[in-house]
Length: 418
Image (tube, rainbow, N blue to C red):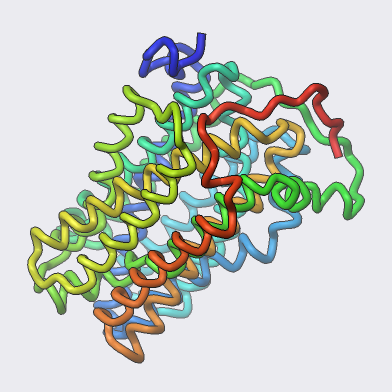
C-alpha cells in the first residue's frame, strides 16, 4: 500500500537505513547553513561590498558546472554511501580551515574564496550521491513519503541553522564554525553507518554516450525538463538570499540575530507546508500546484523587496518558503520516481547544476545588481522576473501543467544501463 493511500506520515522511517540517512543529511545541511550565515555576515562586515556576497555563491557553483560530466558518473559507478561520507568529511575540513582563518585573524576574501571553491567541489560530488542514495534505501511505495521528509529535513536545518548561526556568530565567529565542524563530523559518521544498500551500477564504459546519459534522459522526458528548468529560471531571477545581510544591517536595521531570523523564515514556511503535504499529499493537479507555487514565490519576493517592516519581511519570506516547497515536492518526486536507478546519479548531477545555478548564480545575480542599482531594485526586479517565468513556462510546457498525479510513468521494460 502506498503512503498516499495509507496516510502513514512516517512510512520512510520504518526502514533503519533511511533513518541514518535522514539524520546524516539533516546534520550536514544544518552545518552548511551555519557556515553560510557566518561567511556571509563576516564577508560583508569585512568588506562592506555586496558584490562579494554574490561571489560567495558563484565560487561554490562553478565546480558543479565544470565537473558535471564526472560527478554523476561517480555516483552511478561507485558506492554512493561511501562517496557521500567522504565528501562530508572533506566539508568538515573546509569548515575547520575557515575556523583557523577566523581565530588566527587572517580572514580575507582570497583565502576564503579558495576554501569555498573546495567546498563547492565537495558538494559537486556529494549531492548527486546523497540524492541518489535514498531510493536505494526504501521500497518504491515509500519514495514519495521520503521525498517529503528529505525536503523537510533540509528546511528544518535551514530554519535552525541560520538562527543558530546568527546566535553563535553573536558570541563569536569561531563558535559558529566550531559547531559546524562537529555537526559535519557526525554527519560523516552517520553516513558510514548506513547499511550497504543495493545499487544497480552502470556499466564501466567511459564513452561519451554513457557520460551524457543524464542529459539525454532529461531532454527526452519533457516533464522533467520543464520542471528542472522552471526551478532554474524562477529562483535564478527571484533569489534574494545573498542580499539578506544587506537587508538585516541597512534596510531593516537588524543585527546578526536578525539575519538568522531572515534566513530561517523561508524554511519555517517550508516546514509548515511540508508537514501539511506529509499528511495531505498532492493527489491531483500536481502541475497546476507547481506553477501556482512558483507564482506565489515571485509575489513573496516582491513584498520582501519593498518592505521596511521586519514582521512583514519575515512573513513574506515564510510565504516564499512555503510556495517553494510545493515546487520542490513536485519536482523531486517526479525526478525520483521517473528516473531508472542506473542513471539516477547522472540525472541528479544535471539536476544539481540546475538547482545550483538557480541558487548560487541567483545570489551572484542579486549581488551584482545590488552593487550597481541597490538592494531593493535587485530584489523587486527578480520577483517580477519569477512571475514572468511562471507564465511563460505554463504556456511552453503544457505536459508539465497537465500532470495530474505524481505516479511513475509505466515502463514495460526497464532500459539497460548506458
